[in-house]
Amino acid sequence: MKKLLTLSLLGASALLQADMSQQEFLYKDPRMMGMGSAATAVGGYSTAVFYNPAGLINIKKSHGVEVELLGIAVTGSKDIKSFADDVNNADTDPEIIEAVKKYSGEAFNVTASDYTSFSYHTQNDLAYSIGVLASVDANFIPHDNSGINGLLETHSRAYGGVLLGAAQKFDGILGGKLTVGLGLKFITQKSYEAGLDAGEVTEHKDDLGTYLQDKYEVSNSGFGADIGVIYEPGILTALHPAIGLSLMNIGTLNFDDVYGAQPMTLNGGISISPEVPLLDSLTVSVDYVDMLNAQQARVRNYNPYRSFDQYDNADIDFDVMQHLRAGLKAGVFDNSWVTTTLMAGLYQGAYTAGVDFQFTLLKIQAATYQEQLGAKTGQLEDRRYMVGLGIGW
Image (cartoon, rainbow, N blue to C red):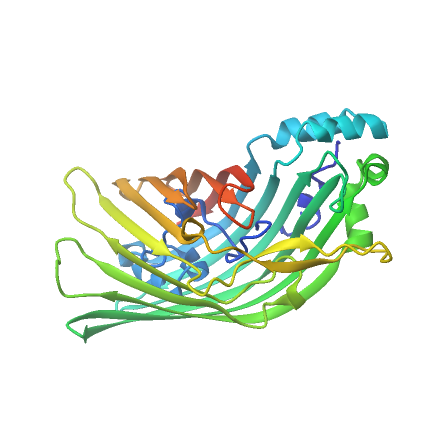
């Protein structure tokens, strides 16, 4: 299937992420995913606007104006290349069916995204950021029995928009410091959901992206607001504790409940940042996200008399591991030439790991995490690997 991944390039001119059921984030930062995505009480980067806008306050003042250009991140599932090669080498319906059967029940993802931003933390404890997001997220699940979900099921989207964020810190609040953050965003997207049969896959395997675009494309756009706080109590100061709370995606990002809709989520987290000899910094954090259990899985509402596929939201069974995040990041070096940070964590019950390296203007990041795509933990898992490359100062 030479162009199975063509969908990932539909918006290549702008380098237009996501999951099949867990859609609470528009963008996954490799630096955050490496530490289990436990970022509600952490921040420190321009991408805090995707987790808790109050986290912008932790952008280091010493960095001055932070510019991140061409923050390109590519994500792929563990066996995505083998899957694509096997289907590519199949030419007939029986060969396609046999190739897909080999991977039946697995999940495959390819994501290409870019987040370019400008951020600044002033000397008056005000931080603000403006960013432009562009992303393509392609997801596939093969089925060996070609049931109601077809031989090859896809939940994919291409989307982008503009995000604004600001955070202000106030001293002397309840004996500590309180940061209040606000984010605003406009997002437009095109989504694609279908259960393709063997004939469709065989006929369109070389132009699958174009075929999905012509037959299944649904367009939506909307505005959203995010509100967040981070409270630093005036106790245990050697540990620098922080408590974070964010309410994300307030507004019209429901996109008529198509794939990629952004539910409003309430998230909480705690963190400590003790000073440790031989390390530039150390942060340990724990999050409990989506307290309102707003996340939903996508299921096909099959009707044989309909000429198109209809997917609807279905409630996800409550599972605490779906909501739990934990992680740490250790700053090994941080000077004017080299910055190196190592990360590890727990995300939806599975390990994460990552590294963030910056040499002068060049930024390189890598991370791995496992996505839970089913209605409960262990039902449908997808180990993913991320690589980020950008220019920043």
